[in-house]
Length: 431
Image (cartoon, rainbow, N blue to C red; front, side, top):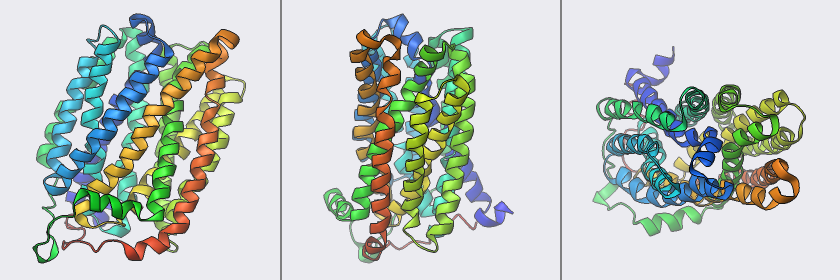
C-alpha cells in the first residue's frame, strides 16, 4: 500500500504540493492559448507577446526566487508556499483587467514574483520530510502538477476564450488558488527549523553559491536546464499559435486537443523519469542525469518532427512527446541537487538552479522565437512561426550533451557534498 511507503501525513503533504504545482503552471500557461486573442484585442506584436510571456516573466521570476528561497531555508517553507500562492492567484485574476501592454506586463510580473517562491520552498520541504532514496519519486509525483497544470491551462483557457473571452479566463482561473493557499497554511507539515551542529550559523549565501558552482555536475545541470527552458518555453508559448496559424484551429480546439495530449505525455514522462532514475540511480548515480540526457536527445527529434510533419494529428502527437520528454529532467535533476547540499541550503540550491534556468529560459525562449517570426514574416507570411520554431530541436540536443556531462561528474561530486545538518531524515514520511 502507498500509505505504508509514505505514511498518511506524507501523502497529505504530497497531495497539497501537487495542487500547488498544478496551479503554479496553470496560471503560468494560461496566456499561451490566449495569445492571439490578447494580441488582437490589445493590438500587440509577436515580440511584445514574447516579452510579456518571456522576458517580463522570466527576469522577475529569476530575481525573486533567491530571497524567497532564503526565507524558506531560514524560516518556514510552509508559510512561503501559502502566501506566495495567494498572491499569484490574485495577480492572475487582475490580469483580466489589463487595458494595454504595460498593464498586462505588470500583472504577469506579479504572478512571476510570487510563483518564484513555490518550487524552492516545495523542494526544501520534500528534502526535509522524505529520505534521500525516495526524493526523486516524491518530486516526480508532486511535479505531476506541471503537466496537469499545463493541460488544464490550455483546455480551460481555450474553452473559456471560445464561450466568453480571454479576460474571463483569467478571472475564473485565479480564484481557486486562494482556497488552496488556505489548505497549504493549515495542512502542510512544518518539518522544523534547520538545526546545525555546534550551534553553527547557516552558510552565507555567497559561500553556498561558491560551493554549488564548484561542483562540475551542478554547473552542467545549470547549463542543461537553462538550454532546455529556452527551448521548452519557446515551443510551449508558441505551439498553440503555431497550430492556429498553420492548421486554422480555434483556441478551444487547440486547448482541448493540445492540452489533453501534452498533459498525458507530461504525466507519463514525469512519473516514469522519477521511477527510472531512482531505480537506475540506486545502481549507478550517473543515471540520475543520463536519464534526462537520453530524454532530451529524443525530445530534439520529436520537436523537429512536430514542426515539420504534415497534418495536425501528427503535429499534436509529437508535441505530446516533446512535453513528456522535456519534463523528464525535473525530478532526477532536483533530487540530485538536494543530495549535494546540507539541510540549511536546500531551497537555496534549487533557487539558484531555477535562477539560471529562468534568467535565460522564459526570458530568451519566447522572445527569440517571436522576434525571428516577426523578422521572417515579410518574406514567408504565416509560415514565419514554423521556421522560427526550428531553433527548438537544436537547443534540446545541446541540453542533452550537458545532462550527459553532469551525469559523468556526479560520482566525483557526491563525496564532497556538504555534511547534512542534524535532523531526523524522513520525519513525516513514516508518520
